[in-house]
Length: 445
Image (cartoon, rainbow, N blue to C red; front, top):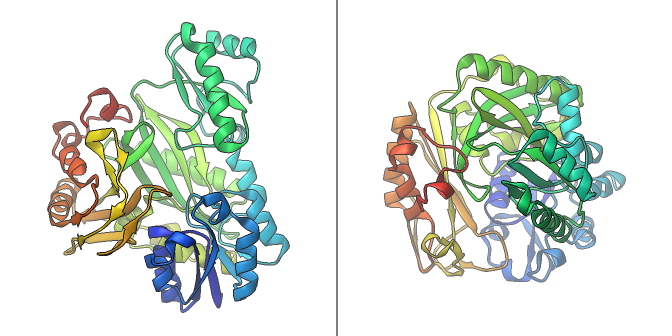
């Protein structure tokens, strides 16, 4: 097994990876910015290296500084977590060239599946249904209008090189198209240094379903699906597994086609294939070539440590799991706890946590990096922790989550804990009568 791994990330995912490494007996190196010296991941790691000032471009995205930290500490491998450099094919390529193991797929596969247009072509070639729209990037306004005329409004303009709702515009009719097309290209250029966009048919009331996979040279297995349909402006808030709306026949068809594609492209590591689901049909959305924020719900129902499996695949090239080994039990729900004020349009709420009491108890898990006295800075993503609860069924998982949210006390900053309580008690959530537009359309918040 690896003797030393550097974690190229921060916050709760860095803590999560450090814990998995400790269970393997692997030494860990934390990198941090100047404002993160007192962070939990720095305290838990065996070694730490400051890689720059608080701006992400000068620290957590600073490849030369991270390479220096690897050389300084003699780390053999790098776990990128999610976000930052986790899907940066150039970073993975540099590591490959320096004989440092990137805990994830090859740089070639990251580049291939990170290009949303190329990924769509690959999915189509391998039998996955794809959303009607442009076959490639569109830069010419007249070409774009012709595509819209063919598939009909509403349409969705999306950045080819990114995600997370950036560079994404919904166009309901032709009158606003030129304005929003230009805005999408401008955003794509700003956030991803690539102004290429593509156009898809927009779904009015879809669910967001994703399939977790683990794949090695020997074979690919799936860890069933997650339903991530509780979203605000394309940002996930609550995730659960299994999806309350799928039949076994739909599941099995989806799993079979997903595993076939992932195996065919020679994927190695943990990955997630995401789909839009509407009116009983699935459509390929994208593939994330990394671990997901919501991976704990899958771990809770399968009993499989996805991070440890990632490390094992990176070291051996193979997955140790057989499909017959994976038998999900019960239902799990995750609430993302953000340092935000939902009553003020989700305004960030940085500051010092003056009191912190985290819930515990039967089948209750908190993945986080916060503690009493911890300073939440305004420089990074506002998610400070995740609360995950498991039950025998969906009703019990919801009950356990409500109990746990009531126990969760964070003072000194404003968080989304109360928002989650409100959503979980809403009749539409209880009846699973919602889609990705629910919170925005019904003004639940």
